[in-house]
Length: 437
Image (cartoon, rainbow, N blue to C red; front, top):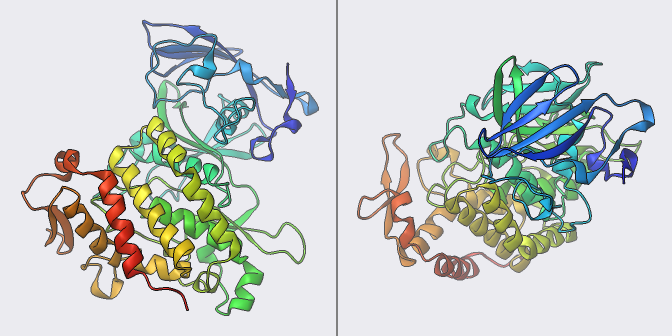
C-alpha cells in the first residue's frame, strides 16, 4: 500500500521527485536499466537490472511504497534480484533493525530525482563534487564520484572515499544518530550525457549558515554552550574520534541556525571520505574544527556517556554492517580500537573529550613527526598480538609504524590476533589513562 511521504521519518522527507522501480533479472548485461518518460539510462550494479519510471511529484500526492524499489549500490555483487528482496544483498535494511520500515537510504534514493540537474561545486577539497538540483533550482543532494577523488592520505587511496561516506552515516545511525549526519548512500548517476559514475550521494544540508570556520566559538564555557550546546559538540567529537577522522577541518563542519529564538545553533558534519584508516596508520587524525572548544574541555555530560554506551552496545552490529558495505577488515579494527579508547576514556575514566582527542593527535609543535600517545600504546599491543613492529623515520621525515621483518602490514595482517590486540589495548588504557578527580 502506498504511504504518504509526510508519514515517513523526518530524515527521509523531501519535496523532490519520486522514482518507482520494478525489479527484473538480467544475468548477462549486469546492469541496472533506468527508464524515464522520454529516454532510458543504464547503471552498473552487480548483475541486476531494474527499470525505473521517474515521475514528477505534485503537491501532497507524492507517495511511495517500500516494496517498489531496490536501492542501487555498487558495493555488492548480486546474482539476481528476486521477489524476497529483504534477503537480497542489494536491499538496504533499516539500520535500526526494523525490517517493517524502509531504510532511510532507500527512501532518500527514491526521493532524489534520477534525472537531476548537476551543478559543480567548486569548493570540494578531496575531489570533484556536484550538487543535484530540482527543476526549481533547489539543491537536494550532493554527489561525489569515486573516480574523481583526489585526497592525499598515505593510509587511504582515492576511490575508497564513497563507501566511507556511507559508513560514517551508518556508524552514527546505529549509535543513535546524535551527530546528525545527513542521509548518505552509494549509488551511480549519469553526471553528463553518456557518463555514468558511481560515488556517494548525500542529502543536502539545508538550514546551514556556513562552516564553523566562519564563526568564532566563544572561549568561555557559559557563552560557548549558549552558542552550540555541549551535547551537540560532544556528539560530533565522539563520532569523529570513533571514525578516526583525518579530515575534520573547519570547512566541513557546518553551523545551522537556531530552530527558534533562544535556542542554540546546530552542527552538521559532512565529508567523511577520509575516515577509518587501517589499524597500522593511526598518524593522521585531524579534529581541527572543534579541538579546544570549551564544551569539550569539561567533564563528559550524561549525554556523552549515554552516546558512548550506545556505541559500545551497537559495535558488533556496526562492524558487521560496515563489513557488508565493503569496508576493509583493517579499518574495522580501527573502529574497534577507537571505540574501545573512548569507552575507557569516557565511561571508565570520565575524561574530557578534548583531552582524549589530544591523545589521538600528533603534536603540531613537533611538526607531527613523533607518534601520538595512542599510537605508542597501540603499537606495543600490536607487537604482542603477533605482528612485531616499531617506529621508523619515513621518507617524509616523520616516524611511521613498520614491521620488524620488513613486510607490508597488509601482508602481515593475517598474523594479528585481533581478540588479543583488543584485550591488550584495553589493559594498557586502563593502566595508563588517569582517573578524573
